[in-house]
Length: 84
Image (cartoon, rainbow, N blue to C red; front, side, top):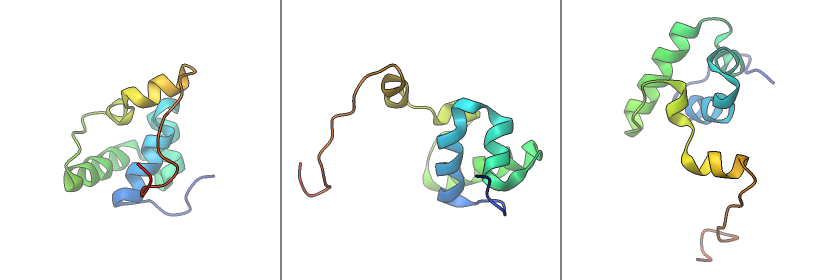
């Protein structure tokens, strides 16, 4: 479901990352920017810069871990943050 208003900061990064595999047009739309790809990219770059994430293009948000999980790999992690 698309956001009714443009997202910003970590909400924008989370949404963009979740939809990065579907392309920049889809990610921009679902993050509340409609067809305004330029504003989406500019705001996403600002948000990434604020938290120290290197960003040149949407594909930068797709991590190796995401790719492994998509290929049928599994993620091994504790059940809770306190159980390492």
